[in-house]
Amino acid sequence: MMDPTLDYISRYLLEEEIDELSINKDEAALQDIEKPFYEILGQKYPPAPNEQLLTSNKSDLSSSSSSTSTSSNNNMLAESLPVMEYCRGIEEGMKFLPNINKLVANFKENIVSADPSEVKYANSARFKFAEKDDLGMMFPSRSKKYTSDRDLDILEGRNSKISMIDSEEPVGDDVYDEVLLDCGDHRLKGEIWSLRETLQLEASSGVPKKTQGDHHELCTLLIRCSEAVAIYDQQRAQELLNNIRKQSSPSGNGIQRLASVLADALEARLAGDGREYFRRHIAKLVKSPDIYFLKSHHMLIRAAPFTRVYYCFSNGNILNVARNARKVHIIDLGIKFGFQWPSLIQAISKREGGPPKLRITGIGFPEPGFRPAKRVEGVGQRLLEYARSFNVPFEYKGIASQWESIRIEELTINDDEVVIVNCLFGLREVQDETFAIDSPRDQVLKLIRQIKPQIFIQAEANRSYSSFFLVRFQQVLSTYAAIYDIVDSTIPRKDKDGKLLENVYFVPDIINSIACEGSDLKEKPETLKQWQRRNLRACFEQLPVNPDIVKECKKLVRDGYDDRYFIQEDDNWLLQGWKGRVLAGVTAWKPRLDEGC
Image (cartoon, rainbow, N blue to C red):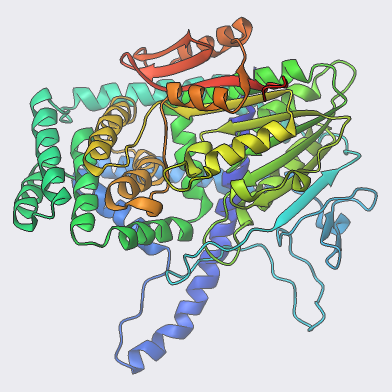
């Protein structure tokens, strides 16, 4: 059985690397022009806007790079091999892209089509067009846009729609088939085992691991420091921060890296700079190429089974509900990069009697900058190409907006569709009743009830952040001590993608939860029990867990992952965790239609 998610990420990475090569050439030419003017003015030429995050990554890894010259040369050779393979693969990879000569564009009606007989709507400059607009300017080719630090306000999102009515035949190229086969489960299993073997070699080479004493002492110092920060005891807090920094390191073991991040967040809060500190960190991520996020996600599915289990549970339930449907409409709250859907597209393409028409409405929050809907639009185009390769009729609409402000009319729900709502870890970013009397979170649940989906699939982390800082600090410390323990136990210390994973997935939440307060808090997670109570109050009925899906999910966890991961059923939740601690769960609901609701 193949793993389409890994294939989808690989294609996405190929696109991003091609973009990076083009951008680097353009930036180099621009620098050659600009540098002499800076020298005349006696000023130092500024670094490229995306160098800050890369510089921090290099400094974090500098302490681990002082190995022998032999190992350094080996590392350089190992890192160059993927680049060599990539260069050899560009020519073959271009075969997968649509033929630009067949592309039809109508910008007045915001339509992009790969065939005149098809209708696809998009608000994107993905392809390069040899046409001019009304002002005689050439339409821009697809390129990276870097957002200014000054512009971090959320702008209103735009909608985009992509539709494939009559798909083309799948590409019959031998290379295409080879790519799909290479991205199968056997490859992912190989990568999982490779990580574990590297960890064993690292352990045998004497790389220091944390001790119970290190963990206890650092946690004690951190809690005492948070108490001093809470009452703005500058002298005491600074003394404790100095002690914490002596015992922590951005390149140390798990608890040392976590302590380093927490110390920075505490210091920002103490200085009254928490909000700006978080915004500056997010600005770096916004400027960063998507390749950072893709590599982080790739590392996540290799190191931990959580994401693959969520996709297996969700897609399994969708396939059951839509078994005989001719039209399927999935509303994905929090679509992000759309990694979940290639595996579903591949599965429904094999359905006896032919695949249904698949509609996906991808909903995301507006991103900072001048293109708040950039990501949700880009996801649609990539999924469109993937659906075409499997001959699945496909339509996509992207919405970038605050979720509680979305009206049901925007979703264009038709009576002849099987409708599914999918939300994996997105609702925790919607504010609750501590933010407003009319809870935005409850408004979103009300919208889902209005949709009347055949099934509503929800995954959530099993944690809660208090409104009170001291309680919240201990909750964050406890949660991320377990998460950093997973990283330390499953990812080699010197792996650069492991550091990216932390910077992209964990550090923003830690900084925001500790350095910020009130309406600046980005997430307000709840425990699984709290979500269960909230959804029942909102007139949803929890569905029993399908035993066949559970069996498949358990098989995924056993496929090479660390045996300290566990998966179990409880109270209609499928739970996942580490070393006996439940970290997250996924479940399915349907709206109650009785008179009391």
